[in-house]
Image (tube, rainbow, N blue to C red):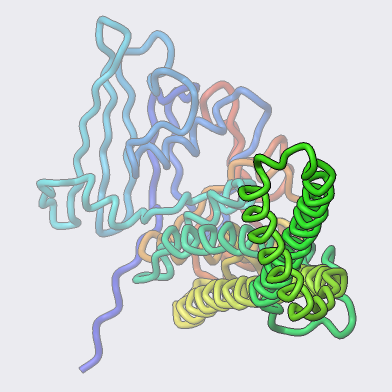
Length: 444
């Protein structure tokens, strides 16, 4: 069993009294094109506002009150066939106004929540496709997001923005690491491991200790030689004094014997001491240490260079991961959009904008924009087959014919506001009333 198609509505009759510039008008549209024309400030806009206000209750102009100046109340009646709408605006003493709304079925039953009934018909988007084409890209984007249910555009954009900033920082740090690495010159042949300087320093210290011991022994021998020479001089002086010091001969002889024995012992010791060993050349060890330090400095620079390259490679891998995450989100968004039932073939979502056939919507031709906007308006108002075009005076002949064709294509009733049109069937408004209603002549 198939579902019964939803009932659609068009305006069968509009009555508007004392709305803005209007006095009293009554229109029963014939066909899908309803052209409202005349000079400026005669009430054309007020008539289209009557349709909009009657359905939504929302003000479509900057005027503080929908009631004609000097009047106490205004009334809008819309006959949609199986639904009738009556909205009244009543002026208050403080300059504000109140309004009432009655929505009845064709059997005369009144709905308890009439505005809810109308909101379900009107939908969420504006009924004016030309107004949609003039919206800012971000407003158009927000308006069409409702056609992709279950996809969080805000979170997708926020996550991509977060990763884009993170990737920018990671790329900056990777670039800095590579720039620092490029500034380091590593000499050819530099080993990967540093030389152990401590062993060479210990060798240098041992050589210094050895040489210091030799110097000490050399000094001791020189001192000993000086002592020997001094004591020999003492012996000579003692012999010269023997004659004068006969009283001391015995004592001196003992001293001389002791000194001679000591001198003999020390001379024998010197004879047995042998030659001193050769000194170690410390300059060679010092040169080795200097060379080791140069090599170790080069090794340190090489390790710094390798560390920076490794850091840059890790950051580049992190950047690639962020890029992939962003691409995956874009793919997820594209998949959600591809699976969504869009009102127009070729409509898509860019970065905060909508696209048409892969290009920004505002770069499409006026005819393409109007065609797409009409389809969007009809998708948003699928049950109420009514479209309002307030700036229809801006349409050239080709665009006008395109609107006529689209009205037929989408089976919708298009109300257009023009200036002094001479088209057959145009409804002329002058001083708030219908001046002339031309009969649309069928082309033979």
